[in-house]
Length: 317
Ligand code: ADE
Ligand code: ZN
Image 1: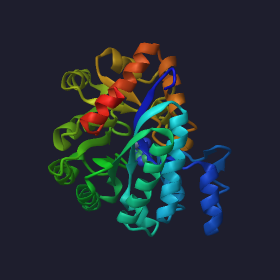
Image 2: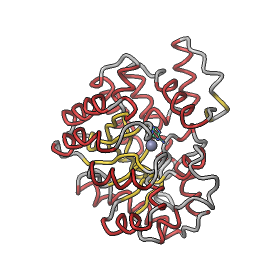
Image 3: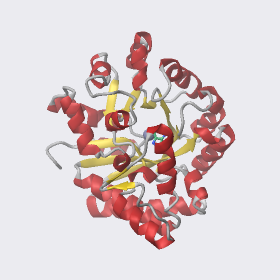
Image 4: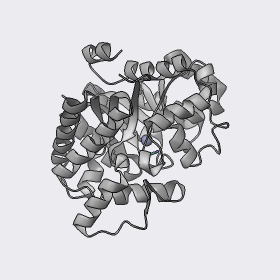
C-alpha cells in the first residue's frame, strides 16, 4: 500500500486510452490521429470538441482483444498510482459503433480486469453507461444490457454524454429497469447544467451518486439536501478545469462542498484527454486545502459509496 491509498469511481474506459496505445491501434487500422495527439495528451476545443475526440479515439478499439488491452493498460497504471479500487464506466454503444457486440466488448474488458487484479491486486467493478445524447431509447437499450450482465463485474448503471440533451426524467424508465435488476445507480449531472438538473436527477432517477454534481453549489438548499441524504459526488476537478466548467481551482467548489458536509470523492474522468491522472486529482485536492486525513477520507468515501459486495468493501476499508 502506498502512503496515500487512493480509489476512483468515475472514469470512462475509452477515455483512459493513452496516446501510445491509441497510436498502435490507429496504425493497425490505417487511421491518422496525429492531428489529435499532443505528447501524452489529446488536443480538442470545447465540450463538443472533446466528445468528438473521445468518439474518434473510442472507434480505434474494435475487438475483444483491443478492450482487454485497454482495461489492463489503464488498471496497471492506476495501481502504480496507489489505487486500491476502481469503477470504470463502459459504453456498449461505443463498442457497437466500432463494430463489436456488447457481449464481446464486456468479455474483453472482463479478461483485462481479471488479469490486472491478478498482477497488481487492484479491485475493479464495471458500470454500464447509456449515452444521453443518443436519446432515451438507446439509454434503455444500455440498461437492458446492464440488467442482463448484472452479475460478476457489472454492478452499476449510469448516464453519461451531453447533459444539455434531454431532461433527466426522460431516462426514468432506463433507471427503473436497472434498479429492478439490483444495480447501483449514478448519473452525470451538474456539469454542464445547473442545480435544477441535479435536483431533477435525484428525484427522477433516484441515484445514490452523481457524476460531477458540482454545480449543486449554485443552490444552498440543494447542497443541504445532498449532505442530509448522504449523496456521494464523483468530483473530477481536472476535468472541470480542462472543460472550462470553472476557470481556476480557486473558483472550484470542491472545498466549499466538503465544508457543507457533502460526501466527496475525486476522480480522473478521461485522464489523457484532460492531462491528468488520479495522483494529480489528489494533488488538486491538496492544493484546494484537503489535509492528508481529509484526502484519506476521499478514498474511504469512494469505497463506502462503491457498487461492490460487502465482503470486498470491508477488505478495502
Ligand atoms: N463522457 C466522457 N467524459 C464525459 C464527461 N466529462 N461528461 C459527460 N460525458 C462524458
Ligand atoms: Zn464522466
